[in-house]
Length: 318
Image (cartoon, rainbow, N blue to C red; front, side, top):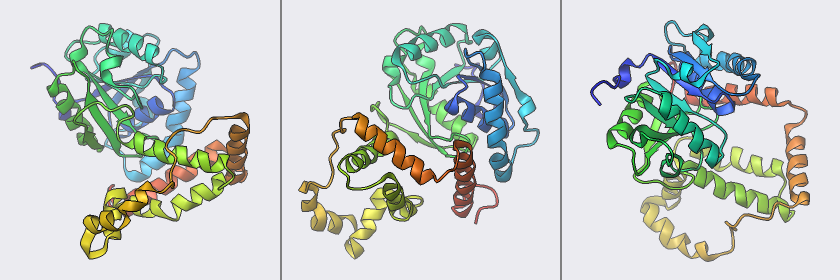
């Protein structure tokens, strides 16, 4: 629509849902100099959100803040309509429950000016199914981030059957303008791209714990000090391309293709028995070695900043 704010002229963002993902979006937008209006139905939403922003701020400050950026630009409202009033973009980050998403997106749609794009942080649902009850389905789009949204650049953008192509393009342009690495998907796929790949690795890890083949600590070490180092800059496809030597991916597939039939992986999810659950929980607590969740978040953020800087993805990176 002609009265939609240009992506580079967005000034105010509404964040609906203030949990880990929603709060991460709030911190990211604040760091980039936006005014943020947030709403969450939980009675303790505001203190939890401000604590999350406070915890994220040191890493964001190290990466570099926009002129005028600060937590003082955050307003937490009592009513949903108050949060979206005057917003140039809305980011929904409610819990991953389909009925809840449908109701909330319909509610957001009903009180948000018709020209404003509404993005959803869903990690698995398609917009076609989530927008079923919304009147203005044309301006609803998936904008799926990775945790923590204030540091991980990736956002997967994809519309539903009713989403206008112009809305998909506007969302991608806006998110790129604010520093995100955007994948515009050609079609809806449950779980999108990154989560499907992550889920395959997660299922195999659970099978290995269930069968006594590896501990959580061994599984993490195998990725941290193994393929994870390469994936930070090449990803699995280029990694295997190099594994083929001068012949590249063609040589890789011709040489190792038969091993795809070997029983190396089990993509069906294992039964989450009490024994498996306890083994995973205990093993993970052992791997944490006394570090609290807050300790691990600080460690994660510090190391992500270091990686992003080394890869040249932030100001000051080499």
